Length: 90
Image 1: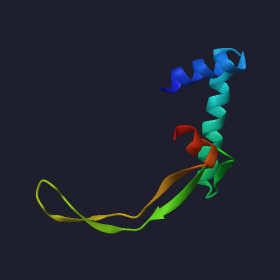
Image 2 (image 1 turned 90 degrees about the horizontal axis):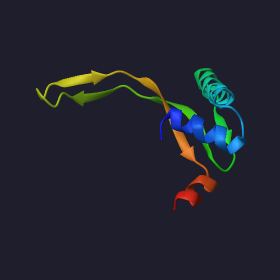
Image 3 (image 1 turned 90 degrees about the vertical axis):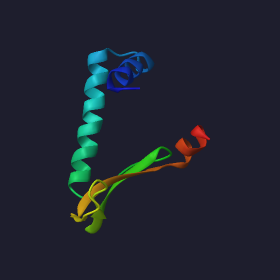
Image 4 (image 1 turned 30 degrees about the vertical axis):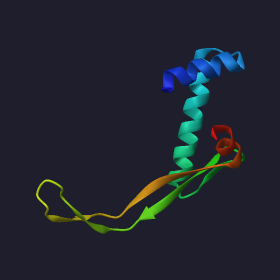
């Protein structure tokens, strides 16, 4: 399912226009993004939690040349599925 398919499904399920569904989805993604950017976390009980974790710098290896390279530290987004979502897919 891509973004367009999700907007279509949201509009049909909620009985709203596709424009309203797109606006709602855009609002969700922008609010989750801004919260994570600010160092917070987003929890939707029963569905899951998004959080930001720092990945430390480390050494890696270029698979083509075998040369050792330094991989810089960076922040990564993590998602942990909630019990309701985990139960639904199992």
